[in-house]
Amino acid sequence: MTSAAISELKAKLSEYLARVRAGEQVLITDRGRPVARIVPVGERAPHLADLERRGLLRAPSARLADDFFKRPRPVDAEGATRAALIEERREGR
Image (cartoon, rainbow, N blue to C red; front, side, top):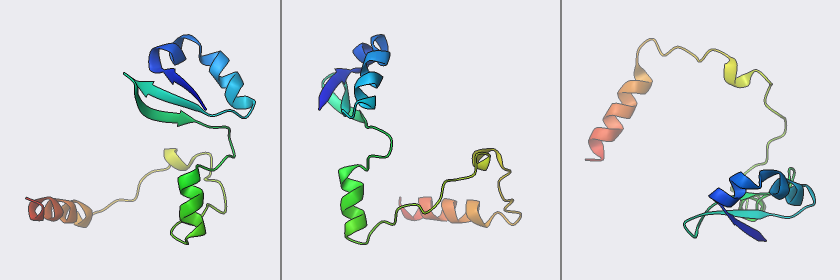
């Protein structure tokens, strides 16, 4: 696996994307500490594949609609969600 600092990745993004297209993974570091990984599309992360094998995760069966994140969110008229969040925060203190 190739490793690249954020600054180097920004300067040579096209080069690193070409490597990923060729099947290579790129580990992104920030001051020497790993912060992200770029993997080819369709390749499952090893930890996700392990969770799926153990029955703790189910892979998606379909893609989200293209407008999914643009759709209006449901309205919580009674504020139940907000109340539950506030209560959870109070209990944690």
